[in-house]
Length: 308
Image 1 (cartoon, rainbow, N blue to C red):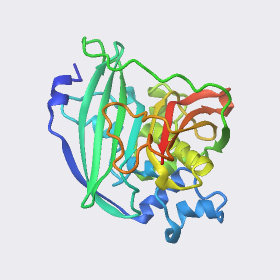
Image 2 (image 1 turned 30 degrees about the vertical axis):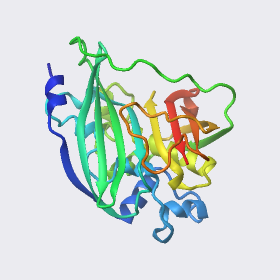
Image 3 (image 1 turned 90 degrees about the horizontal axis):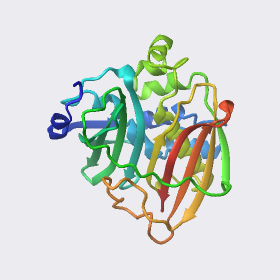
């Protein structure tokens, strides 16, 4: 079998040094669509080096190497066809605000391999720290079609209930025709997002937007709409990728904010070492994202932002 669960789970963690500069942060923000309007003070926080703040989801591309989905496929015990791989979900805990430039040690390992019958789900956990201590912990959940059925653990089945009632805020964010091509420059060179022939082989009509680009765009929408543009208030952020986005479409981001709710991270992820989403003055935002042009086809589900 291409996935050897026992070998993958027993493999030693992989450690690498990562570095980033303000230019890397600016490129990431531009890849999310920041900078419109170009002179807006709120957008200059993402694009101008003298005012730069780091959106926490930058952690998913910091260092410019292969993203978690690609990195997991090179781990011991994993040998699968990239065209059968989808990014199933992403969770992030921010231990302290990310600096605009830095060097850190990132340690990654496979922490779970779930057997879903017709597919396998890999969980890749990465922890990043610098001399000042932990910076972030993230988990990528990778869905591999056709690799289940060996009788392994199915993994957690419980999912949160959908938000009730009308959202408090709804915003729409356009996805440019060239956005996937720009976002690829942050390090994710998967041809699924640029090559029409590869996209068709993977079962899509045309190249699709990176799930992590939608992930970042959504967090930016929440920060700008409900957190006064203050990126340092984000403690944790998790989502399930429920559908694809095609460049040129429009994201509809619905938000249900609530105060003082308990943490929502998967049990395997630690609570933030700075502030907790269950503490005084903290809160949670439930989010649902859909594609406007396809009759609100689901894009992100089970999405939660916990904040100070």
